[in-house]
Length: 153
Image (cartoon, rainbow, N blue to C red; front, side, top):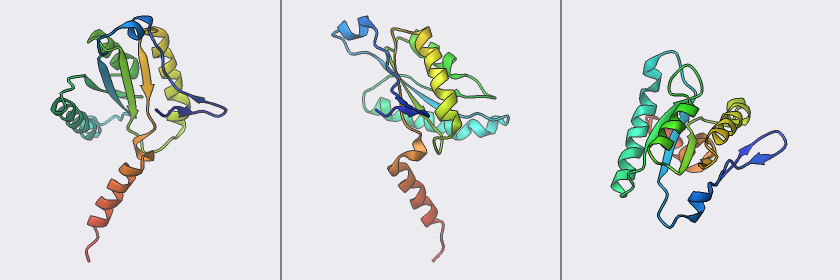
């Protein structure tokens, strides 16, 4: 699991609840796709489709865990609300996936503060945070493949 690179340190946002460590049963894991947000509601449509695809793939793999969306600003739900909903549904682990193209100031500064607030609100919850999807080589390769397919030869 990748942490978030801050100015002087990398923080891996993991919090273990005693009950989660001592349980023999598997802990339900939630996923939150975290995006910036916009004033135009249509902007969220690709993220809603992505969440639907992830939900379908989890279900096909026999994993019924929840998949939600959260936004940094201008749209709802915010990250705190999305995490609250997953805790209410029984999740003991939530993985936040920033659906950003790169590690700008929102991911270096704003997201760590939001995650710390969520960890304080839910000390029993393990919160994981991945790197931005746009930083992942396979995602970049898929985008490059799309770009190349647009070139008429």
